[in-house]
Length: 234
Image 1 (cartoon, rainbow, N blue to C red):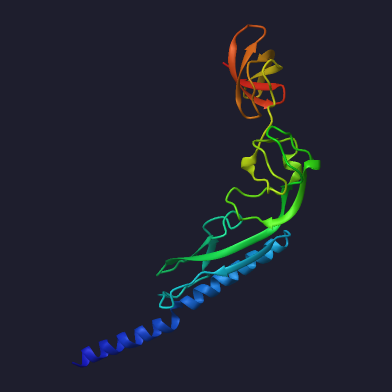
Image 2 (cartoon, rainbow, N blue to C red):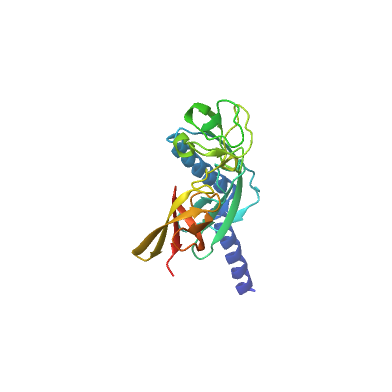
């Protein structure tokens, strides 16, 4: 009987000690709050304004105490979704992982159409302007650097004030059908060039059929620059 009493008392005190050291819902929310605030401060340095709210955590939650520093990371990009999840994990002898939801609104300068844009139009700085928008309102991601998209082509008509996203633009053809091109055959550091004629249109990085003007052979080449294509040396 004495042994049973001692064992019961040990369980009681052990349970009490765990309850005092357990990671609670309040602890989880505080971790997430600090994490989001630090991220928001970093974004402020990039001229972005962040508004956020932590999702509810079950008040009954009790996890093992974290022996070291917990690790926190976004599961999804908060600049592409207004509802990112945060993964909080803790290692040690009793590791655990916890997902916390959050509501995030990220505001900052983005590129918008200064006037109506037509399909196939090549962009110039005169057709664009910047305005503060909610950057994560669309998963497609807002474009923010005008220099990076000048010369790009509009895929479909765009209204004035529309936020430009990558899916609205495409790279212009670096080579058009009938263009005379330089064909570069490469093997390691060794290369040989010849002249050819493009049999189709293609952008940089795309493949196009090219007729070698010396041999009259047709080859499939990769566009590496305007007027230049590359094939592997055989």
